[in-house]
Image 1 (cartoon, rainbow, N blue to C red):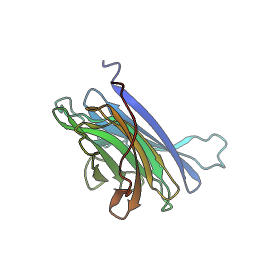
Image 2 (cartoon, rainbow, N blue to C red):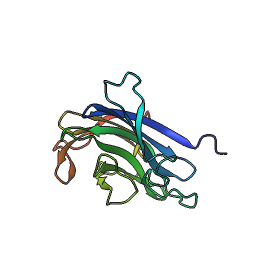
Image 3 (cartoon, rainbow, N blue to C red):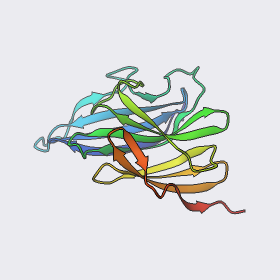
Length: 196
């Protein structure tokens, strides 16, 4: 038993019609991949507010809850060790958006965004998710740890993340586009840096 297997657990909720949708994202430290699950509650008129459907959870859809990575102990790349989740309802549907740290080799990491292609994406592939690699600030080699994200009413993103190599905390504003997200003309803004 791996007692600290599920880490960096985040919650986000949104209404889809008369139902309330709860999304959970987390890092599986055993298999080093980013996962999520979704619960749909019955309408407001239901006094019990009971769960009507469960998606992408081990009890219902085994293997379909991975956002990025492989649900296998043999995979050694960290995908999603740090993450944040929001739900984009600007189109009228509840679409999952997850910003996360993607370690791709050695000491190098980057910030990536996974945007669901449906209200319930199932499976870690480009059929279910749009994967958008975010350009790091100039000179940053290991960027994206301790990521936090907020979303405005238009689906645009406000993101903070740390450059581990230089110890600098950055903030960036990202406009939602038809093909993903683009950083504003201001680029990454330094919030703070470590003491010398």
